[in-house]
Image: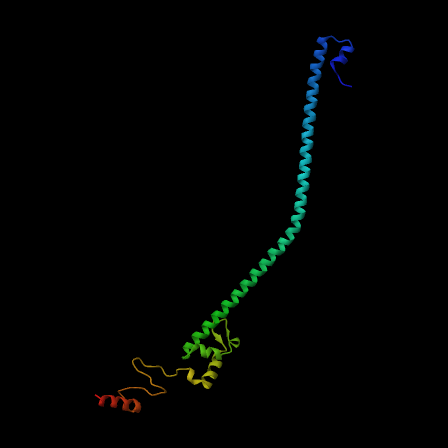
Length: 192
């Protein structure tokens, strides 16, 4: 049952009394309406918050599953990085070993470092803690015995021309002169 002007008139109230009651009743209704509206807004806000929380929980559940996959992917990447780093260090050590072998072959007076290096068993050569090559000397001695032409045991003197084998074109010592070159030089001198 609603409080209306007609209802109040039926109960014998005057127009002034009805206006006064309706004003007070309007204030109460307004206040109650405001309260209802506030409570409705709060309820809707709480519903939205619950919906948001539910959505966030669903997202968290979904992300937790994805997080596990993400963690696995991160672990895989970390493992790949460790493997790549180890591979890089291995290649670097191998390259350092090869440079050391090449320098040692130059020091051993190899005429062609690449040719001598091809005869080495580089897997049997290691770089020790003292940064020296282990296992190279024995192999070099064997190669020098079996292929002495790959090494230059006699140092060349500056300004001297080496002509095949151990013959030298040295004007200070006639016994060491190549007879063939001497004959050619005499012919050239006589042709003038």
